[in-house]
Image 1: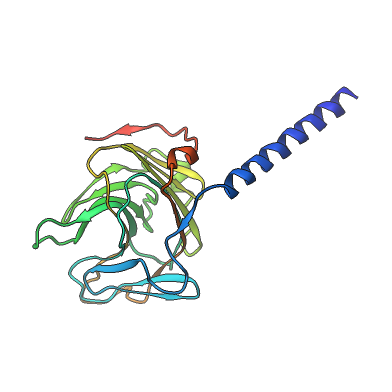
Image 2: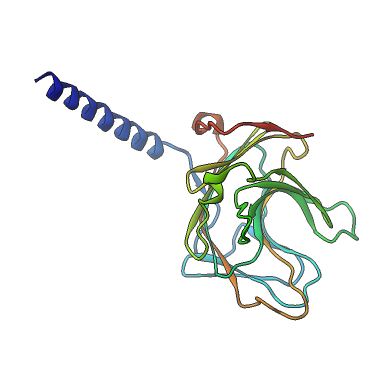
Length: 240
């Protein structure tokens, strides 16, 4: 009888957790950044890459002989926020990413129009999707890679839908890939800026020109985002 009571108590507690979580999600002040119909609220920055909307998705398309990357960029800037989106990379895939708090390049000669924290989408065997580097023009610097994070390296699914959750609160940038913690970074370089979907440059040979990256269900919390942060047990790293 005692075991039955204990089991019933555990079941009740579990149901309460589910109900509370559901209630919290319903009360979460999500704002949609993509209406599923067109690119209202977004603009193209950079080279000759192409982006268009089809079946409720933003499709990003590389074009051959593009000397620099192209970005599908929010028209608004954001400082502290929680951002979620679904993305899918056509196999065999190519390098892409999501920039947050990115700023306009200060030099007209820069190879990349925007600088910022780039959350990597990595199709290579290295599998660092969900890591973060500082994208600052013709070069970059990894701030948080996945070399010591095997669960996150295994979380990315090429050719299938994946989900990023990106929390940018103060100096702390956290990323989850399919609910698996991938980045816990402290840095002060970028404090406010655009959100941008990166379309990688492509050489004149056009190899891989037909591959697409898909984005959908892009949403953000900007009102009191601290109230909706998730617990993360991934070791934090402070980078100058």
